[in-house]
Amino acid sequence: MSIHKSYFDKTNTLIYNSYTNTARNPIVELFYGRVDNIAVPLGYSRYIFNIDLTDLQEKITDKIISTGCTSFSEIKHTLRMTNTSFFDNELLNDKTSQGRRRATSFDLILFRIPQNQQWDSGVGYDYYDFNSNPLNDRSFSNRPSNWFETTTISGWTTPGLYDNENSVTGTGVNYSGLTIIDTQHFEFGNEDIEFDMTNEINSILSGGTTGVTGWGIAYYPEVENISGLTENYSVGFFSPHTQTFYEPFLETSYNDLILDDRNHFINESVNNLYLYLYEDGIPVNLDANPTVDILDINGDPVDGFTGLTSCLVTEGVYKVTINNLSSESLPCLYYDLWKNLSINGSSIDDVENDFAVQPKSNKYKIGTTTENPKLYGFSFDGIKQSEKVLNTDIRKINVNIKEAYTSKSTLSNIKVYYRIYVKEGDKTEVQVQDWTRINRTPDGHYFIFDTRDKIPNEYYVDIKVVSDKNTETYKRELQFQIVNKK
Image (cartoon, rainbow, N blue to C red; front, side, top):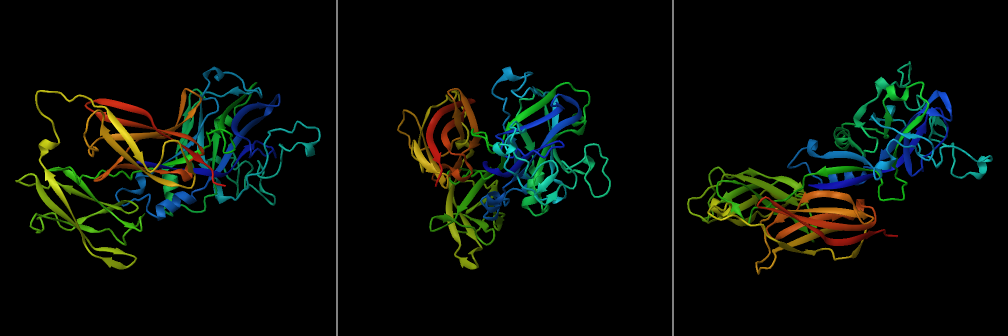
């Protein structure tokens, strides 16, 4: 399982009945209630944004993210935004510097911008112009977009994108006409945004949905329309213009895990074999998925194991699953013959590999003694300790695993995971990638680290090994920096 991060390419907060633009504010503040010491009219804000899906689409086109062995529905997309009050519980039920009380017990909706309306972000920062001479206040702007305008020469079909009382007739947009992508409940008001956008993004990537110009986040109409409030309530999230690590993003998770059983193929079990293709050291895809025949030691096809279908796991990697291949004499050597190979219309000779079928007893340990947890040591190839890595690199990081305090060679069959994070101060670890199984191939273990969608920072890698109900975590086995290329 791997992840890809897509970032916002434009964003703005629309303030009810106001021309104010706050597109470059480092904080997204969604508020409702009394405004400027006036109980009516009501005040509230809505957040709009668009996501740059170019790199994600490119990975799908190149089959780095492949649906060959899975389906589009198994590619998950989650919108993540960090709450500005997440780090300090003392701020709960307190007021911000602007006098707004932190909102609790509410729901936010994620909706698609209606009617594919085109809009610009704008260059504003402040919510209000406190300078008597607006020309001297560079942080305040009423240039589009705002509640009424999309660009200098055009406006929203309905001010604020939609009418929350469903009172619009004709060409306008009512709340009832919105496409709601997801909703999220906030009990304490310090939770992070985690909207599920799986169906929406997959429909865009597959061409089922076209022309989308962005999305919006807002309170339910029932919240926006609360009357008689004597206070203003708000919740804040870091925006793309934050000076912290907490830039919002769309997280795409997809299954590209490789667990190759060539070195420990078990009799009468489900086993996976893989074929790896490179052109001048670069992964390359075939024109079509190859078929696989299993041959016995004499080179004769095994009944029931010919013409097996394969699938594309990720760029340049094909998998075939073999169910319940059995042999009476064990261990026994077999061959996997990969057929119907072609690249760019040119046929390639069949490829024959071999594997040894092992008895089931190799998979289990049965006896009078228990298996004790082991300690492991790790070394890495593909990246150096404390290396400064450009944010244009894609690194294949080989993980060499050995049992500690022994002379055993590199282990090939072990359940091992990695986790990547950055540090905030001395005690806080900000997760970049959650625990993920490391790929296992006949010649070792590895994972791919793509720096192109990572924010420059100091990164740390933990390793976790699971054995005999014992989970052992090895902290900060690898440390490196991602730096900008100018």
